[in-house]
Length: 264
Image 1 (tube, helix red, strand yellow):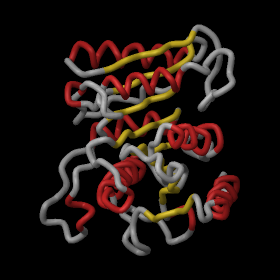
Image 2 (tube, helix red, strand yellow; image 1 turned 45 degrees about the vertical axis):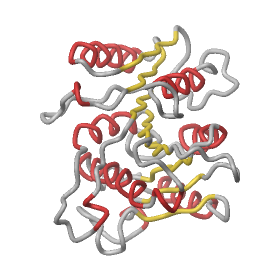
Image 3 (cartoon, helix red, strand yellow; image 1 turned 135 degrees about the vertical axis):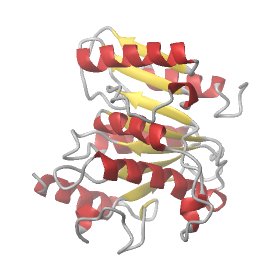
Image 4 (tube, rainbow, N blue to C red; image 1 turned 90 degrees about the vertical axis):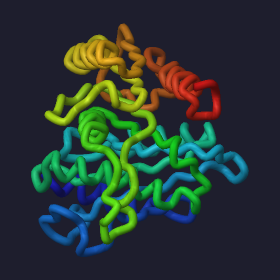
């Protein structure tokens, strides 16, 4: 089960070069819940920076899907990151820990640490720490809900200064999956959330519709798009006849929310 993921992790690390590079979420030996010290035990971010002069201070952490046993780096990582770069957004593709070696608890730690890490280096990347989107696809979308529910202010007394920072995303993107509710979930306090699925992908579509209703009733901010045709796993879908408008719709949602400096 782990061999394809091992190859994928090494491939992304090798592919990251002068333009795209990897940064670990934790220093070696300090990864919480670590089951070992190999490549599969060390979550990291791959940085995609906009072209020179185009950055507008926004950021996105992208969690690709893959059923929690692999990561779809192409459709749900690289292509999405490059689209965000076109908008002037600095993108961070998250390589998080996977089954069967790790469970949801480790992934929630990875997602919250990714948010804190990006905030801790906001000055370096010229980012606005109040304009960070967490974007999840499929299994990554399920994780996004758990990350948002578990997020919050850091520990002011933490030895690691990164752990002193807030991990709550400012916006949330959930594609294909609505995830599951957790005991500490407060939908009213969720970040403004964009939900997306295809109607034929019934579990994802119906779950997303229910989450929208629940957020709306709770007083949260949410927008939902259910496409009438298509499938699971469409990614950025730049040239897709069914889904190509979705990232433009997301951009409009973010602009209305003030992500790009529009009216909030």
